[in-house]
Image (cartoon, rainbow, N blue to C red; front, side, top):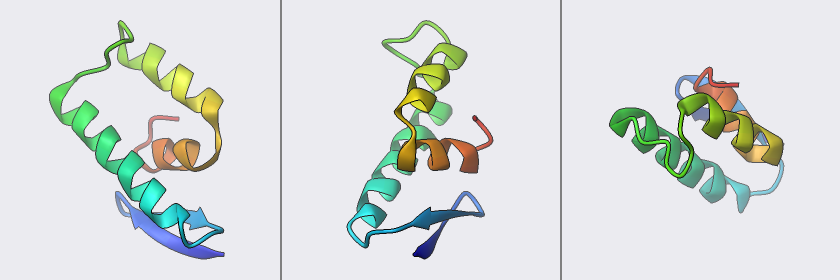
Amino acid sequence: MMDLQINGKSVQISVKSDVAVAKRVASHIERRIREDDWAPYKTKQEAVNAWVKLGGIRLQVLQAYDLA
């Protein structure tokens, strides 16, 4: 298990290849926050609720941004 720092918080990564996934998800979340773009969802909360259901790395990244 390794730690990846995202938004100043530690995200647990179990497989080395997941580092790229976590970084890509973080970049995606940062863009959404910066642009306030939650499409195709109507609201930020709808988007977050949908993404939380995916779990795994995505959930950890959302938690790093205090979204979940």
